[in-house]
Amino acid sequence: MNRLTILPLLAVAGLVTACTTAPGTAAPPTVTEAVTSPASAPAASSVSAAPAADTPEPDANPLPCAAVHVEAAIGDGSPNQDQWNTDIVLTNLGPQSCRLDGASKLELFTGGDGRPLGIHQVMSAEGAGDLAVLDVGDTASMGVSYPTAEPGTRPDCLEGGSFAQVTLDGDSDVVEAWPPDPQVGLPPVCGAVTVTSWLAGSA
Image (tube, rainbow, N blue to C red):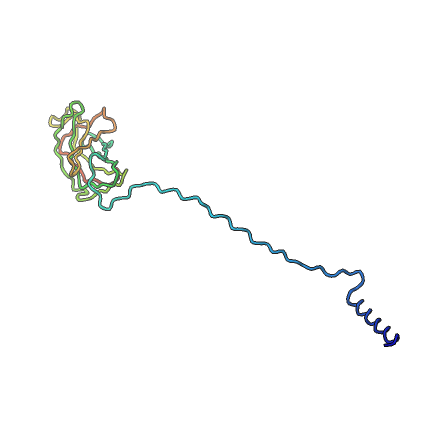
């Protein structure tokens, strides 16, 4: 190939090179993506739940309440010259639920020598046949009412009563019940003492 043929070829090659890469222009940088691993999930908590309190479950078929597992008190009542109306309030202190069937036997006693007054008890038709179920800590009330009078005005009245004894159904032991102020005592009993069936809850 002669010199005249080589020169045009070199010129064409130089033109192609100039168009491909302009003088002073750097080649585009290579982009490298940084891959980061996802954050680790926090460790599961190892705190355990506190144990539930040991609370007695209500009994579906409770036994009769026993004197050893209850306490009783006489309510304030509403004393007047004609009638005294009050309640014997009983609280279940036992380890489980218990039941009270109907009414209970009641007797009033003097405070000094503990002599029974010998009252005549009459069952009221109010709430007859009801069943009172007491969970632990619950109360029940038995209504008590009798005619009364001013002390000494009626010779047939039974005077000097200070507290009551309650005999629960099926139990040979008794539960004592005292009024809020033991020093005051109970009004004179001037007739039959009427009692109601036990009713769950205090009056």
